[in-house]
Length: 474
Image (tube, rainbow, N blue to C red; front, side, top):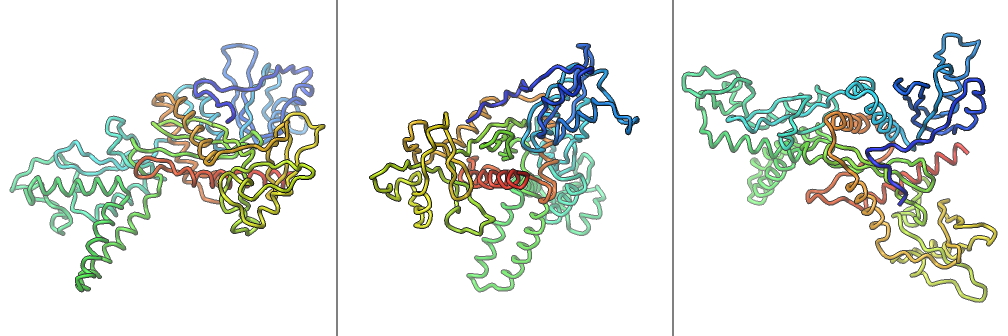
């Protein structure tokens, strides 16, 4: 695994800039995607921080005066130092840019990047008669009762309204002092509320309904679906078809409400996710971890020695799952290695084995580890001694677990600014349209375990996409 960027320090490249010889400095800059900062001669001066898909092209426009564009922003006379960091994706660029701005501008970084508080549904469980509200500022002390983030406040309000139609929880906002003389409201008249205001139910009964709403929000409707499906199946088995049909209608209603809450919507205290993105380093996929209110990473997951699936080829067997492969040197006079030694623990298909036997050792003139191409165009590394690279069963799973462990160890308790900014960045990326959202996201299961095998398949897709983009650019 490649070196991991410390969460408290952003490692950046740096060169000096002389306005009298701007071309010499600009020629040293890469043409890749970066986050950059331009510093003046004064130590107290605020740097100019930005991100660009082409650093050299962007700074040529900023630091080289042009007679054709006299109104263009020109910073050559003020800049003395250029710093930059290569990034492999827009997600990483936004994260690095935010952390740079936070170090310079403090709370104003949220405004500069237009990072607003995401919308949550808050369950007021500490109230004697709980209810739900939509808020943009969930309390960290009651993070177990804040569910989100939603795409917008409007989507959160719609989900809350549709969810309340399935229960008899109160909608009023007053502090209740139940008494039989209370006039009630329209919801109690329509039998859409248990009416605790005029003691229309016991406190125990209202507590049961509130607990059901809390479970519904925490599981995104799964708790309600399990109950209804069980009752429907029992009614159907007992030949009570009318009751089963009515329960089936309720199941359909709950499923329609459940669809309004994406997979990202979870209790704030339990919101954890792994995001995979393209990396600026060749042969790697960037791994990010969101946990305890903070984005950590990237950690580089090495794809060297990993057979990547190629979904564009239409193959269903050869590249069905990523696996670690073992380069077999070609030794004169010896027969090809058996199929069981080709991959790490799994027998390859016949066509794959024939292709894998064609791997040849690198020429001796290449120093270090050299590349050997497999059928998918992915490069694998052979050792200098041309010996087979032994990868134990589960090597890729162990590699992923090591990356996650490193991210957890480097995670720090975030400040309120970082907590809001990182959550807003995650929400902004997640709710983009699929056509514009690059990378993949994975959530833990009900027991809190990561779906490592599914994440490895995601690594393969991200790596294959990077190879395809680099091939088209080349």
